[in-house]
Amino acid sequence: MTVRKNQATLTPDEKRAFVRALLELKRTGVYDRYVNAHNAFLMNDSDFGDRVGHRCPSFLPWHRRFLLDFEGALQRVDPKVSLPYWDWTVDRTPRASLWAADFLGGTGRARDGQVLDGPFAFGAGKWAVTVGVDRRTYLRRDLGAGVRELPTRAELDAVLAMPVYDAAPWNSTSNGFRNALEGWRGANLHNRVHVWIGGHMATAASPNEPAFWLHHAFIDKLWADWQARHPRSPYLPAARTPQVIDLHATMRPWNDVTPADLLDHRRFYTFDTEAPATSGPR
Ligand code: CU1
Ligand code: CU1
Image (cartoon, rainbow, N blue to C red; front, side, top):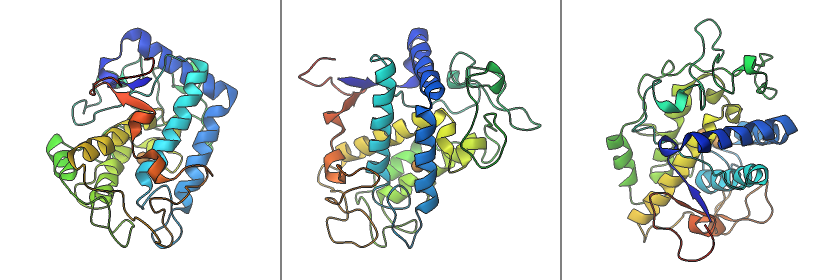
């Protein structure tokens, strides 16, 4: 069973293996398929049209499945790898080990935002951005520039305390846990982290930025944490709601999965903060 770990606890070997698997998916072209897919969905998700990945209830199950597919691709390269999560309430500065040269590398240079150190620096020769908003092929970051502070634990706890999953009109104006976590209302959690990293992370092609996966692995964990705190709060809407994905509706681009299928992450992986699953190999 896959165990997802806090990135701050990874050993040097675990960091190396994760980076190696990312670089291998990039080399074979598999990685950029995920960047393209995310880009296409984000561009299409709008408050008043059909929406599935963002600005809607299925923001959380859509990204859960997206991450599961990607983690599966990583594990075909190296079965020992899993997606680490980044708790940005704790590791909240550009000096955090996440941004060291042995992991994701640091912020971009002032002139053009180009990341210059670490395995994803353009100069290292293995990370050319091919899906994006312009012709610059180097990974860009500007940590802490677009917004100065990452969300705090207190802001996060206030959102985790919200008892209702989501509410009409099921978009970026909704009052509920999903929209507060996504960040369109209130303290702005998920969206703010994209902006804090800046560069590619602040575009629709955000998976060009490897930190995308660590950020979304944490968002995914927060959904699980919220479920544990509110065991009687269901996914909403339950049924028959136009333009969004209800509990038993199929989520595109997949034709075999509904939110109901994804509610229990323990079918697929556990987090290092949980007791290990009682059956099955680790
Ligand atoms: Cu997304
Ligand atoms: Cu995101």
